[in-house]
Image (tube, rainbow, N blue to C red; front, side, top):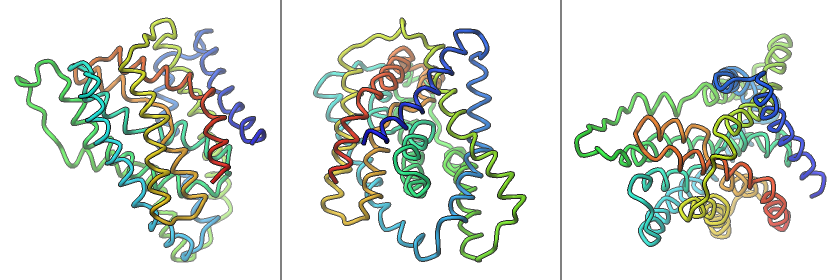
Length: 315
């Protein structure tokens, strides 16, 4: 466990570098957007493609989707629980939808992927992607709809759901890299050496650029501006207690490989999504609450992860 924690500490040191270089004005707020685009549109797709083509056979892959029922059920149950929680603890009206979304959906790529790689290595990537597919689907459909309900003028505003926009978010370049890699693997085609080398260089950018982006976001939202209140405590309980607990309970009922369940639990216990403050601003929700939830969830994670690791290794 100590080795895994030290690997995670290295990941968070990269985030700290991003924070410090933002303080030194090497990075601007715009830099986080650039790094995010490079990761999502180049580094991550090649990472997915090479992982599938290098490490999996047809039989191994087909066995993966049996476990997708766990993230689907766990996230829907967590969402339902968040609706009861916000009503019982009287979450403010301008943040109720945002609360339910960040209580339910986690940061599965920018933090989730590097953390799982640090703990389990490349063999965890397909399980990471399975959870990511479900998490992203729920976030960009139900999650965004709930955030839109926080607009104080929602009765006057017309919130339109665009299926094509949601599909574009779900079928991201990362998922397309996975699908292309899957087809390549099923057809048993050898990846040319120059593609493997080129893709490998880009894939290796995933972790450092992801953590730099998180460090930049935390800096520009400002640690001093973070405000802790009972609703943020509720978010932290959702992210770090209820969400992984529901996954674990489902894992006792639905038989899946141990590694798959471990990855799902870690993915369920991730900090808040990066894009939450931006979406809260766009939909006139409580942006301060969204930014503070993101900041506290990231800062608390380094303290929380040793306890999570101890539980994971007991499975």
